[in-house]
Length: 169
Image 1 (cartoon, rainbow, N blue to C red):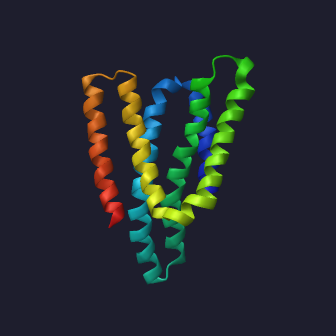
Image 2 (tube, rainbow, N blue to C red):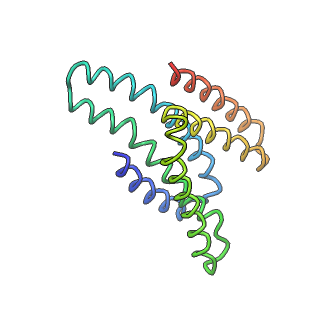
Image 3 (cartoon, rainbow, N blue to C red):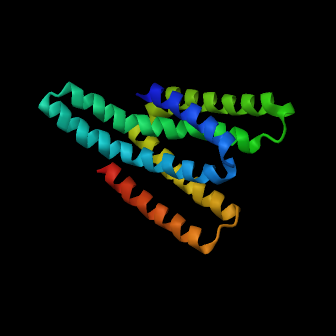
């Protein structure tokens, strides 16, 4: 499910980055990624335990689909969006794509071989969710958002905190 989400998200993120100004789509993608990360934990735990208790293998597949596919798809859409934002000319395509790919691979290595063993998956997913939403709020402030968007950002922060507390339980 995660690999299918990565494939779908990378393709769709690249397509949308070409169709819509990526400066307008980056913030919503960051928020969606953060919120999906925070909803993944309670969803998978709650529904997964129910499916296991009932011995329902089909339900486990659905839990994996709804728990991991959206998160992987949205997070994978971030890379092509950031590439499009950073790409000033076609002459620097290789450098921009190479740099972002290297950063992503380094992050995967550090997470896979260090952070998971040290902090566990739950803490990493929570930090990811909170970090993405906080990053969006910081990006919004840096770009000079208006009052209406500022209220929306505060609502997202409140929802993030509620989801984070639900994920801890």
